Length: 325
Image (cartoon, rainbow, N blue to C red; front, side):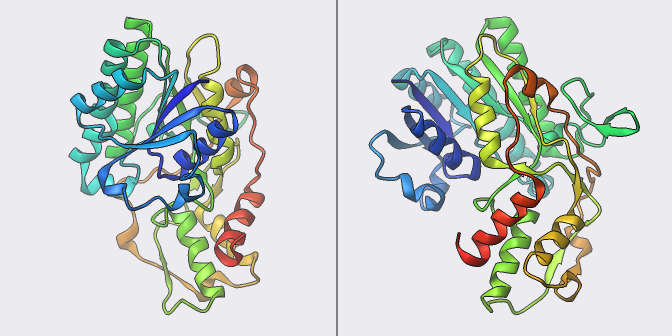
């Protein structure tokens, strides 16, 4: 039986990844930080599973990380923990870098020194590309070959971690890879992210719980939105290959925040104009305007492809927040 360690187990991706790994007969150790120890909502259905155990863990504590790696000697390690909110990274840039960049170095050092056969997955992000893109046949896109020019402290920290993964792979022959994941959502998405903020508001509206307008920022930003279930399967596939490498995971389509907003309200036959207001305080200091991924490499080498469309993603989130299904 394989053993996998998963940081960020209480988050959206961590919970779906646990579902997947347990279905594949893994023994899973879910790692969570102390501040998350009362937030097991996303994994409550797994808490009594005989092959899941939970341990406190801190990416900024090298000694604790060393102890964990020595103890478990895992076959696979998935690092999904991060300060992952872009807006917050502008308010807390040092903390973001300590967790999202230095924390990854701590993990790589521990694997190198105490568990060198462990296969390591690092969660990257399309935010590393920033405003940069390539163009083909009149279409803008980002792939593994696109130059990365992040526009936020979060993007910078993730890019630093991405390069460290490549260094440890080449310098120490570790099996470590980075998934460059474009935006992926689900009913388990945090309510501070715009997609879930929208669908949660609509759910409250349907249940007669809302008293005010939905405040939103930039509606013109374009994102490549997929479903987290598809993306955690891509993470798993990356660690099953003969050789470690980095891969973009994306749907290859882009939609604006406004398009998501309209689709969500239309799905319950409501006019978003009656319920929303723009709050300029919610605009980012430096915005990433356009993201559309080219996941050809993952499709060809991993055999990965998204199963959810934009419309089925919106439907899944709306059904969950409005009707609990």
